[in-house]
Length: 321
Image 1: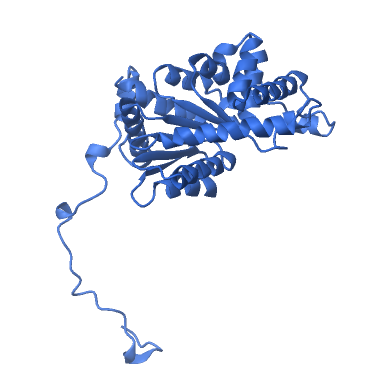
Image 2: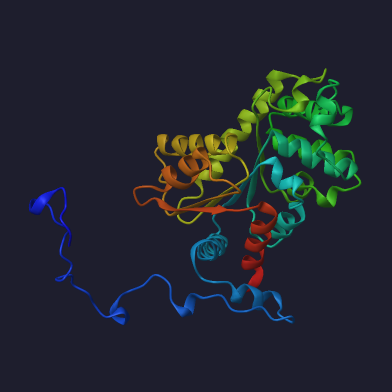
């Protein structure tokens, strides 16, 4: 080689003695067995699912589905923690079907879930144009929504029941036209726990004239304690799915976990998963990692749009049912 400014004291490392091995002798993470298969024009659902590559996210989805199947067999809770976007992307019919098949033991929702699910049940549409209404000061001003949610909280506090149960009861009492599409209605009719976890001031109903902070606080706190009992029952094979809530439900779930362990209960062999189109700090930390560390279980992260991944998970669940 040519003369270097570094002199003979610093020369490039000699590669002549590098050790190699035969390629076929090496263990590898991916093989032809894991590859995707081409889709034919007459492929049925099972054929499509079988054609997916068994790597990364698909492998995780299959493992999550297997653990949900196992939880159902063990009669352990399968808790779906959902954000409002799950309703707005039209997934209620998928979750309702899974509920009827035994793949949903309980639903935990944030405040926006109550708003959007109730509006779907009442009028068949939801999700107003915020940009068009905010400047006029009418964003969130739908009378029926505020009246229903706040009256339900008052009645729920009086009867000492949780907010989710109270809203489901109130909604059904109005015999809404589209109750078949409502998670609240279907959960209430099926006696499946529906807990609601509220950040006061974070939802449109909180500035309506009939708002009662004490009633809302009492009912949502009842739901926190109810969710904690459901989490306690996860020990030995239960599953918690966080779908589309980046802050509220991950925080609530973590507090349920610590409450359960604080009271001396064992919480191990659990499965948690976060589904969202971006992976945020709180779901990854408070749902996927912390509750399952030190051998307490398995945590998964699935990145992508709910309207694609949740029907895909549902298809995997019912494929061999």
